[in-house]
Every structure is written in structure tokens, then in C-alpha cells.
Length: 205
Length: 349
Image 1 (cartoon, rainbow over the protein chains, first blue to last red):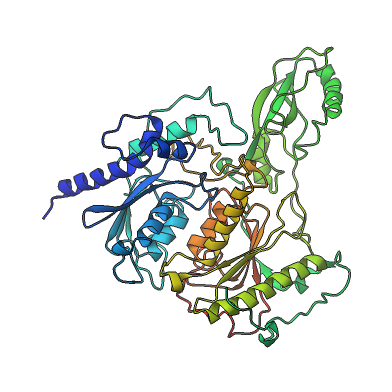
Image 2: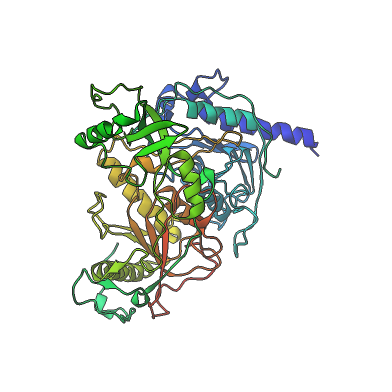
């Protein structure tokens, strides 16, 4: 059996992969990043959230937020990845009510209420995330769609935050401190200072 | 979809206790309207919940110059916005004048020469009037705000014309739902018509979303998601290069920053802003949150889904603390045919 520490190492490994989906946008040096320059350009201006879906110790899908590019506020990283999984027949050998029942999600930010519900309807096995999402979080921060709410068909799933949490927070802060040139009314953020202190998580771990 | 079916063969599903014939501008009494409205708890009652806009303001060192500045404001038509706020603020012996939203006037015209001025600065002010005393107190801390509690007897009155518009949308749902069932899908349909009131929302098309879970073996192909995607594609093709879905501020200091995907500042072209979505069944939690992310104005549904719904069923998403948008929820009551729209209670609509 794996020890707890081994398991934690494994989760961190996958979370780094999720982080790599967005980290290149900010010109951090990354080893083995799969992001191409073209993708980075498209990604610019998106809220940086990345994810990977893992089945049998392999990544079966990776995605990031594309709400700006598609002008569709619902195209979050998780839904992008789910669509790519369902579009690949080799990943869905049999039609089943819960196609993700042996699949784990690693995502840099707690899934929002919409994605948390989508994941439950897909029968996701388990979710690991970086930092919490106080305004939209669907795995306990605003609403416990993953487990707290009853559902007549779809099983609850466990969602655990705190993996690479500080990195996840810093990536979002770097995003918010940069001029968002896609906004119709760019706000001057010249006076903003990147805060580096991170308070302890208020989330139930 | 396939061949159209004869509408006349559909069961008669609505009984109309009101008269749709007559002056379209007549207000229909609330008790005669064929729906229940969901009452949302008061909002903007914590400092974090206050929605704000950025506006220009300027301090007037000599209070006697205030009237000159007010004339200047009028002359440049800069007094036509922010009517929900007091124009002049006197605080700690300093007189300040509120000018105009920065978004509408990125650079200000020249000030009158006879007045010596400090430089204008940007200030975050409430985006709307205060509806409750607590909200008023909080908003006044940002800038003196008008107090305008809603009149209890006048919540968004419906005219006969609006009722006709809604009834025709309900009929559309019924017809499309029957077609969907004939194609072996769930009877769930979402429909977004052009808005009844012309309110600066440039939207002349109507869109119908279908549930294709059965034929695609994709558990998330819900009708609401489908119609949102259609509208997004339509608007993207309009070439709205200025539309942004994440003009976001995460100003909360000590919490984890949040990927907010929306902000009302983006104006009327923001996805479903100003639009009403009609649907056969109360949307599930995923779809209700998708509608919140998309800034829908209101949701009208026929069948409640008490075990799976996100608009009052298992949860009521626009009533949650902390979410950054609210939409109205109407439950259309007098659809009498129980066979139509039949759907197992454990399905996410």
C-alpha cells in the first residue's frame, strides 16, 4: 500500500500538471510545459484556471478556461476537458450513466457551482484543487454541490483543497494585477502592488 | 429538428383567466398574472456585496465655485448619469463633485478657467440606489446615495403586451417539447426570445435550446447549455470585439482570489444581459449557475424540479450570499396538462 506521503506526492505531481496549463502565460520558467506559444497568446486575458483529468495513472484530458476566447461565460476548464473526453470514443468504450466514475480531477481553483454540479452528473470519482473560490465555489465555499446537497441519482464525491494552494493564489493575483486589455474599460492598475502574503485557508480541509 | 407537427393536435395546456385581447399597455393586476414570483432576500447588505462603478470626482477648494462647476457639468451633459447618487459631497470640510463614469468619459473636457481646481480623481461609487436602510448606510460610505425602497405594490408590473409576449413563448416551449419527445429526447426545451421591452439590449433573434443527452450519450447536453452556446456564438459572430467575459476585480484582501467570469460593466452585450429565458423545467444546478454566469435577467419555468433544480428546488442560486449577479425567477402556474413535459423527478433538467 502507498503511504500517505507517497499519495500526497502523487497528487502534487498531477496538480503541477494542472498548474502548467496556465503558468506559461505569465512567463514563469517551466520545465516540460506542453503549452505552445500560439496557445499562450490565445490564453492571454483568460482567468488562469487549469485542470487535468487522470484515469489509471494517466492524464486523459487537460484544459484551461476559455470564456473570453469563446465569448461564453460557461466554458470553464472542467467543461472543456469533459467535452474532449466524451468526444474520444477510446476513452468511452461503453455507454454508461457516469462516464467519470474511475476518473479524478486536479484543478488549480475550486470548481464553481456549475462545474461542481457537472462533475457530479458525470459521476466523477474525486476532486483535488489548489485554492478555494469564495464567490462561486461549488465544493463547500459557497455551496456544497459535491456532497452536502442530496441528489436522487448521482453519488457524492470528495473534494480536497490545498494542493499547491499558494501557487494557485499567486497565479490569480498576478492575473488580476495586470492590465486586462480585453476589458472594455481597462482600469489602471499601475498603483497596485503584488501581495505575497497568503493567509491560512479558511476552507474545511 | 424533423418535420413540424400539427399544433392543433396538441392538448390544450393553458387556461387563461385574463383577457389577452385589449390595450397592450394595460397593467395586469398582480393576482391575475399566471405565475408566482420568487422573492429573493435583500441584497447589497454587506460591504463586499455592494456593486460599484468607477467615476470621476473632483474636490472644489472654494465652495463658492460649486455652482459654476454644476453649470459646467450640465453644459457638457455630464450630469445625465449617476442620478442615483448625490452630486455634491461635503465631508470633513471638503466639497467634492461627482462627475461621470470613467467608462463613458475616459478623458474629461477642460474645466472652466475661472475656477482653480485640483486634479480629478477616480472613485468607486455604488452602481445603484439603496433599497434598504442597511444597504443605504454602507453605500453612503462610498458616496452619498439616494435611498429608494421598492414600493411593495409595484414590483415590475406586467402589461397585457408583455403577457402576450410571454404566452407566445410558453406556446413555443410546448410545441418544441412535443417535437423533442417525438425524437426520443427528454421533453426539456429552453427558449430565449427578443426582450419585450426595448431597453438598450440589441437583440432581435430568438433561440431555442434542446436537450440532446439521449442521442449524444453526453450527460451534460442540457437545453439551457445549448441555448447559451447558440447565443454566445451568435454574439461572437457579430464581432463584438469589446466584449470581455472576465473584466474582473478580485479585491478581497485576505481571501483566496476568485475567478469571477463576469461584471456588469461590460454592458448590454454581455451574453444574456437583459434577456428572459423560458424553459419547460426548472434548470438543474449546473444550468442555473450557467445562467448566473451569463447574467440572464430572469428565468421562467413551467415544471418545478424539487429534487434537482437550482432555482428554488434543492437550492436557489441567485439567493446565495456572495454571488455577483441575481436574476428573477417566475414559476408559470396554469399549465394544466400533466402529461406534457413528463419527466422523472431524479433528472437534472
